[in-house]
Length: 61
Image (tube, rainbow, N blue to C red; front, side, top):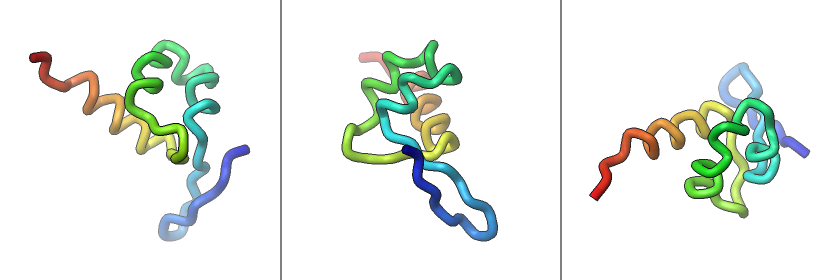
């Protein structure tokens, strides 16, 4: 179940890695989420978007 975190006056839902991977919004990026998210943490969608962008723009060695 998602939890809520107060940020100023707005409240953002927080989701587990499993919830995000199973969501329709992130289904095309499920592999990326599996690589960048931690099982023990919860994330807002804005946090996930930033992590995914950073990963996809990363440098390949």
